[in-house]
Image 1 (tube, rainbow, N blue to C red):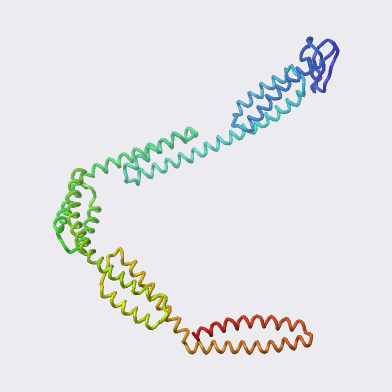
Image 2 (cartoon, helix red, strand yellow):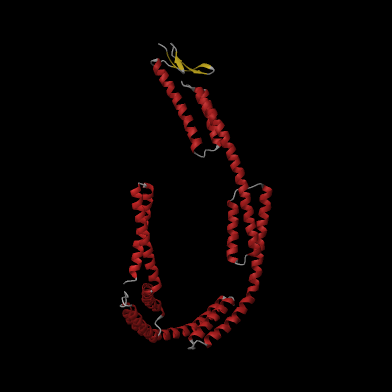
Amino acid sequence: MSSATDPWGRVDEDGTVYVRTAEGERVVGSWQAGAPEEALAYFRRKYDALATEVSLLEQRLRTTDLQPGQAQQGIQRLREAVSEAHAVGDLDALMRRLDALEEEVGRRREEVRAAREQARQEARLVKERIVAEAERIAAEETHWKNGGERLRQLVEEWKAAERIDRPTETALWKRLSAARNAFTKRRKAYFASLDDQREEARREKERLVAEAEAMSDSTDWSETAAAYRDLMRRWKMAGRAARDVEEQLWARFKAAQDVFFQARNAAFAERDAELRVNAEEKEKLLAEAERLLPVTDVRSARQALRSIQERWEAIGPVPRDQRDRLEGRLRKVEEAVRGAEEAEWRRTNPEARARAEATVAQLRSSIDQLEKRLAEARDAGRDKDAKEAEEALTARRAWLAEAERTLAEFSR
């Protein structure tokens, strides 16, 4: 048999396969079935399989939450596999990669330890918060159902939290238990005294029912409605009687209210029917008022609007749900007429007209002077002075155009 070599191993003439490492050559197998190159290829494939296992472990450690203990077991297994490997390749490089992985596992282990310590600290804070809230509930809470439910939730939160050192855990649990017991005692004492309160509430609500029934046939709608609102306020302040008594008294109280408010609603419905006629009349007046727009004759528009306003007041009220809409439409007409009056006054104001005329005259005079300066500058070849005069002329002419438009408003 001939021999063959590659950078990491060789096959001698008798078929023995060697791998080269930092410690020298060692035998990894024997090959009698074929060419030496086939032997090297076979043992290189074994090396590739080991390298793949190392790569997979690297990937798991860097991309998953693989625990340090599991990672260390994998490293140790691969160390043994590499040190005894019947393979040809850079086995020392695999060992160096495993060394790096072991360092990374050490860092991971330290991170896990620190995270656990942090979790214990956070758990201590969580349990201290749970105990503080339980003690507050035990001392202050008067909504018994919510308080009891919240205490049960706090116990579940305690169970879900990480455990902490035993002395602190025990001391905090004793405080939590004491708070739950204190709440239970206070709740029992409250319900023991509740019967007296319910009896007093029954007596007060019987008085309120008697008042409500006495005025159910009143037709003084405003005063009686206010009185019923006051009765309702007193009813809420009286507290609750026993459930069956409370239901009976409330049924009588509500029935008395219903009699009154149904009668009031019927009366209001009759009144609203009358008011809808007023609304129809005001709709007609609005159509008349809106025909004044746009305002072309301010004086006649003002006179017509005054007549409309007088008739509007004479008609009287309309249903509440239409009042804002109708009055809003009339206000728009009033605002338009008032705006036309103000515009007319500004247009005919002699003082404003005189100021506009003076402004136009002043600007025209200024333009004449600037035109002379421009001509003189051009004749004398003073380009800078000519440019300044041109810019000033452009500005004055723009001002004059605006002033002339303003003066024209007074001539309409």
